[in-house]
Picture 1: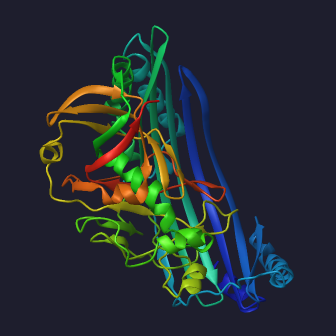
Picture 2: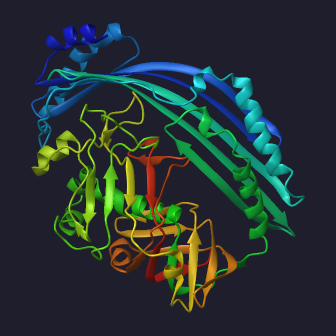
Picture 3: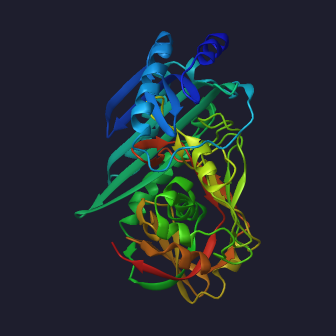
Length: 457
């Protein structure tokens, strides 16, 4: 493939051209209640070419590598047609040519595990959930794995082959009592092998147990509270509420937010550090090289409370006079790369969990995330569950906890960062620009924040 692609690209039209070819194998098992809803294994392959002509992209997809020369010509023609209508002409920040091969590295290759064994594992977890209590009325188990073999080559001399594993497990339980229905889940994901999903019985039981406990939990009373977020919810917050507005393509389209997100502006205390990292062993957000062939980089979005970095593709880096950061990612071969997160997290502080609770007469300890919404700097997140904090101690369980606020005010209101950092990958993924779900990882320590608006469901 290397000699084949290099030979084609030597004759490619336009100022710059690239080819991305992907071969993907994956399998999936889904149970709902006591029914097997999906049991499948499949393979697919396809690719995309991009050609830059007079500041405009032309793009074409293909499913047979023999089509590449024709698709390059087609993409060049589309770029020429678009170039006359482009207001801001695309330029690419320079990067050196790279030749590399990143081989699959997992303990147990799930491609060698029979599909029937995967079914039995999922069924075992499903039976544990359903059998936990008579009040469990529904369950869900979703197992999925994939290996993407990605080949990237461009006219600048870069040629990269990468094998990227992904495995996920989502376990959910629904409980009912006198017409009241509550749901709980455990969601796991990693760039790992089949070993990651073995022996997860405690996670299945935890989802069932929490669903039943939520039936007895009291709804939260709306108000303003000092809130302690667990690692999961704090990680979701930093990804969704802050990470997305650090993506340079978003800022280039939004002049008001671009003025707010000026490098060097203070957003929090000196203890606050927010990282966007391209590679951490075993994590779902890993991209040794992004989908433009740019080598991974670790960048600080916030360093000691000050905005110090943004995420870039080659085009956004050129438009802003910055360096590419390796954040151009595509969810599949059918999509072009756009600026996306990888492993995004808040670095740990020094406080113990007891110190985080100390001095709170009445507050909220919010755990997990049922998702939420963001609109520029405004956010709304639903905690999966929560507990009262009374006199510095954990109290009764709460439910229907919704956190609302302005991301910049919330960052400034961070009082303490725990020492208990965790980095997590879920079975879901990030969505942007019609591309979802993209594997990402997020993390944080426990985080204490004052004056958070909390509303009931």
